[in-house]
Length: 182
Image 1 (cartoon, rainbow, N blue to C red):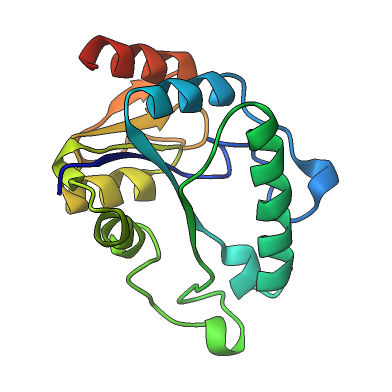
Image 2: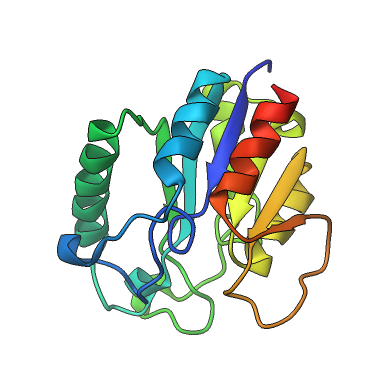
């Protein structure tokens, strides 16, 4: 386990939060995401998206819709010189899920399933990896999995999150942190 990853939440980190994003025309990438990803790639980080998708659980869109949107987003990222190593999603919700999607699952953040899968599949040291999220559940997952650093983008959570993290206003601050530490 010598590799490291930059784990990224999707909505509110990769793209502007619009609430249950599922249509290509609604995608607006966050300012600074392309530069952050290119810098991380250059420093040897794997890029792995870890996203709860309660919209699938609630029946607002399908897993096929999600996969189609991610193909579109990956193609857009590629035009900016960014290649994602993996995209993991959790389509389950214990309370608001419909049918087979109404259940707890280790992948649902604050669970660590998606982070641990990335570590297994790519030989990643979680202790050398970094998470960028916009919700307390992202921070809790990062802390539980033993990540080196977790960043919380301000603006989504109304209150302070528990656990260890650095609050940031922009993705530029995360990029500077990566550059300072090589």
